[in-house]
Amino acid sequence: MTKPTDNLQDSANRIEKQLRSPTVTLILTIATIGAFIYLNYLLQPAYRGDPLPYTLALTAEIFIIMQGLLSFWTILSGRTNPRNYEYHSAQAKLYDESVGKSAIAILKKQDSKVSRTVPMYVHRKAIKVDVYIPVYGEPIDEIKATAIAARNIYGTHRTYILDDGDSDEVEAMAKKIGVEYIRRPIHNNAKAGNINYALEVTDGNFYLILDADFVADPTILYETIPFFENDNLAFVQTPQFYDNQNNFVSTAANFMQNVFYSLIQSGKNHFNAAFCVGTNVVFRRKAVESIGGMVTKSKSEDIWTSLYLHEHGYESVYIPTVLAVGKTPETLMAYSKQQLRWATGSFEIFLRSNPLTRRRLTVDQRLQYFATTSYYFIGFSVLLLLLLPPLQIFFNLSPISTTIPIWQWALMYSGFYVSQLILAFYTMGGFKFKTLMLSNVSFPIYIKAFFNALTKRDQAWHATNTVSYDSPFNYVRIQVYVFVFLLLTTIVGAIKALYIDQFSISLVWNALNTFVFGYFVFMAAAEGRELKKQRQRQRKEEKPTTNIITIEGATS
Picture 1 (cartoon, rainbow, N blue to C red):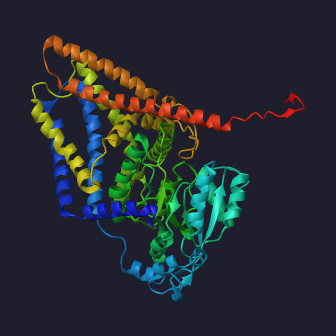
Picture 2: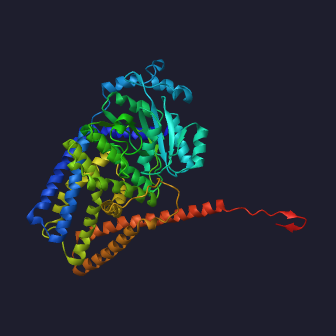
């Protein structure tokens, strides 16, 4: 029987193989050269246009080029396998000697109760492993599937549901399927606080964190624990992959995450800068306790904790093996809340403790964390670039000199941007333009996140895909306003072009932006209609049935 991870792992293996190809080096080299040529083009005095749009364009493009170059550097550095001789030797000795060398083959054939009680060893000493499943109001069926899969992981371990939702139903379910249940008395510091409380009442040498919607493969400890033969290793992170690509949001968001985990995270190993992403990660308890537990100052407890561990000299490992499959957001509400939480957490680190100032990190680590925590400034870059066509259409203000031929600008521009599309097609097997659309229209979320972090406005935690029938337009109002503005601008630009009989690249660019935001609004409307249908079906199912009983001619 094919496991949920099999097809995803085949895809991950293909990407990993492609990344090691010399062709990737060639593509990234061309992209890097293209970036510098384009930057040089932008900085040439002869090519400058009007001061305001030129400044906006230069600011946006410099940031995008900087992020691109950091990404290219990371990808090129990450084409090595973290599994060395020490790892393979430790893996061969992980289980009880009675299991033998073909450990996994034997465990698969055995009863799950036997497989999950086989002792595990690090440095020839028996170890204890805890599996934590932090929950907070997720659907009980979802929690149950995750807990059963966690319970059946190969090797001796104890599985705990950490319930911050105080659900008696979840507690009863945990008892029924044979896993432990922990409910803390005070619900402070969100997920990090939940895990820290669990650390106080459990005693495992290592602990695996699984979010409530991530179903683990039974081999997850077999693939990760051997790395801990390195006494200086703090954690092993595995990727987040998803199996619910059902609609526009889930498909686009999934590919967005796939690019990060397939191309970027692996590269961070080279710099000892791979960071925790909150789930599908195994920690060494001793390392985390040495920094006072999981960091609680932010909703991005994962990155903060990674940062502190690296500052204390600990190491991390990321492996691209798909060992747990989860659910990506399926609604604009879920996506917006998730992105807002992630972006706010990144900005908090950037503003309060900028990685470039962390002297205990290596230079490479500072640059890697800087690239990560500054990424969401892309929202401001998108906004600045969106303003350029309207400035030319309404005020005849151009970012580049109008004497420059369009073909020359297009050639300079494509050297940097088109090569990135080629990279995506070559390594990922294609490129989803829905992802590019969703990324661009997300700019209001990222700008809001920046001001939330700047003003220290707290963001409530929300479970991904929690059942809700809130209208998607409650979360994309700014995008609707942008679409209306761009549509009107395109109309004005078209009328102006007809009147003066002159073609304008700004009109084409603005029309393209109008299409992107228009398509997004269309998808939001479609999602709204589907949610209304779901709500109507649910109401019909919940509607009580009226019982009519006839007794001697009377009805009640």
